[in-house]
Amino acid sequence: MLGGMSSRDPQAAGLARLAGLFADETRAACLLALLDGRAWTAGELARYAGVAASTVSEHLGKLVAGGLLAEERQGRHRYVRLADARVAQLVEDLAAQVPAEARRAPRGLREVSAGSAMARGRTCYDHLAGRLGTAVTDAMTRRGLLRQDTGFALTDAGVEWFGRVGIELARGGRRPLARACLDWTERRPHLAGAAGAALCRHAFAEGWCVRIGSGRAVKLTAVGERVLGEVLGIEADEFRTR
Image 1 (cartoon, helix red, strand yellow):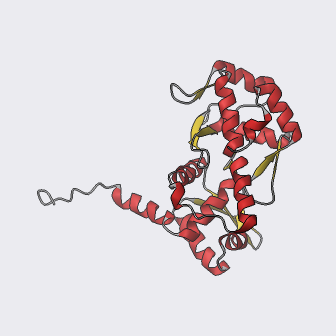
Image 2 (spheres, rainbow, N blue to C red; image 1 turned 45 degrees about the horizontal axis):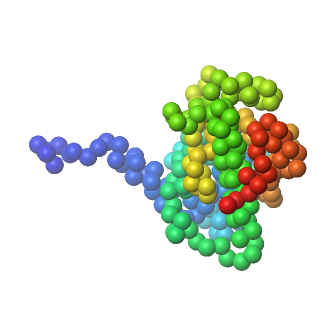
Image 3 (cartoon, one colour; image 1 turned 90 degrees about the horizontal axis):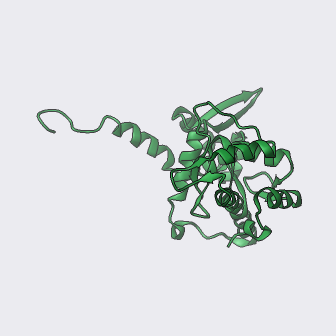
């Protein structure tokens, strides 16, 4: 108290509520799963998190009420997805801050294989991440298509490159054209924003990469290796984890 008035920042309560939404392992697992950019049912998230459907339903209600998830209903099915790209950025940024020594070691060959696949390539909401995402970002920077020395932005040559490759850029909206997203496995930035989303959509549409199973992991195809070698000069071994 100072002069009879509270000196507490008025945003403190809101920040505490927001932090509390992440402060549960089941809710955190659901948020990480939804980074694949798709809508999931409560049952799918319950199986992913390894908890009962009734338990995950309660957690999803809190995340929807807190503005982190958006809810959709189709018939008797209830779907949830991340509310928007800003929420996805927040989840990925927080995940990147987890110290490597605090991460649970994978148990068994299946978990080891899944972790390696995620490190090689995955979706981070609506853009490419992992070694695949950072390799593309590094190649664009080397070729002068992307600047990282004065912020993180596409150059004029970069905008022209998207047009030459046949990727349409959505411009003029609230979302930045290019944004750095800290990659939690590579510990370096990969390309996000409208340009990152457009590149990811194009890569899937043209068969440059495909999803592995039902999760976030993606695999670069032979077509993708050839095309990215041609348009960005990336050697095949650059896509592999170090």
